[in-house]
Length: 278
Image 1 (tube, rainbow, N blue to C red):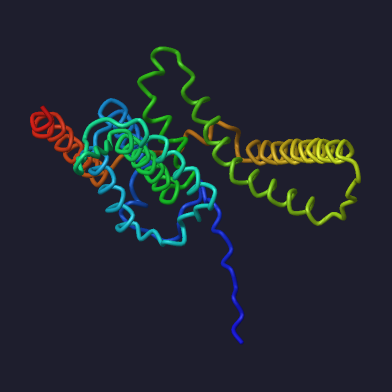
Image 2: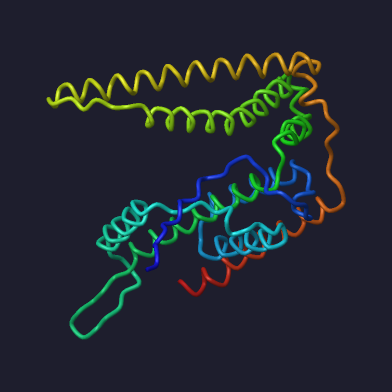
């Protein structure tokens, strides 16, 4: 007699680098931020199939170089597949070219192709953000932002303060997620009294939400106090953005490679595919 065991869904892992080292891990954090910004601008103005495919190839190649395991990818919940199926069905009803003619029946796939393109664009951007999250230490982001924003200091913009605020937010985000998970698990373990009336059940749910929010605020304030004491003991917030941070030769090679691939994809999108469409 065989026992069937259901696999637990893999959670979303954010802002925690995958253990190990590689060329992608050793890149300067500012290089990764520049690549993300440049690709985001490219896909914002030219969200065609060729730029999306080029960026997807870059993400896959970077994942292979960084040796990102398949277990780092989160599990896709079932309701998300249902929502995608509903969205694809409603988008297909919009019609549009191209069309497939089968005798007296004409099937238009324009709306479905637009939906698939937007879905592919979203997946590529999520993969790009995931690559930065899985290969970058949070402590390296603030010095990189301070270095990239150095020209803005002439305009009296407090770039160092912005870098410190960004670093603290990135460090506190995974910590608070873990705390909220513990609070939610502890809340579920408490014995529940099921009221008989519907009105009493609504009041009970509202009270549970209020208690959970109050506990979450208390935990967040306690964590903020502990982090403030730790920062003060290490010399203040200025030390976070004052770490030496600059690009190396491999960073320039990476930026040139990404620029070459994105430029070739854009040129192909604007010339060959544009003329073939016309």
